[in-house]
Image (tube, rainbow, N blue to C red; front, side):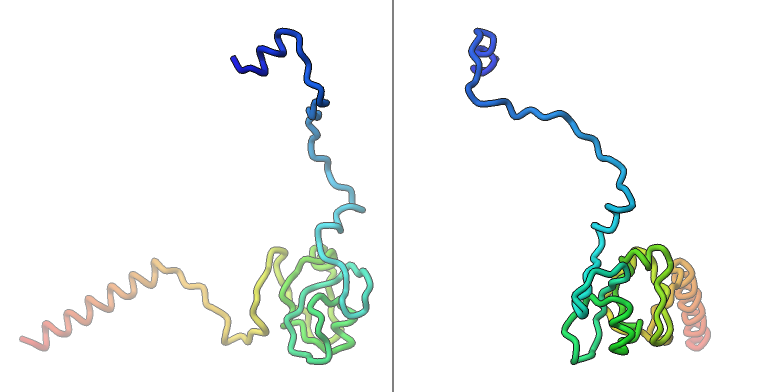
Length: 150
């Protein structure tokens, strides 16, 4: 038994107020509160917009990276330079661009790369098939070497 428990049993009370709080459970967020978890301030027009995304662009006239769709269209920043898909519009699949085509990004997409061309995208290969192909190539090469040495 600790000294604190012995003193409490004897009837002594602490002079400090107890800091015991009731357990609060997480509440479901209302629609008016959901916007607080995404970035919604446009650094170009200095306003709060529901379609703010991060662009890693090469436009030297603008220093900002968090740009709304309207400002990106006005300053002719291509959608290939868009890095995030975190805005309310992109989550609701309502994000549309006027300047150039709109890229379809996943909700959890996050990349630090600039624009990609079709030939630069990585191909998704099944590694088990690659290993099988490599093994058959090795066997064929070994068979050729055996036949040549005879």
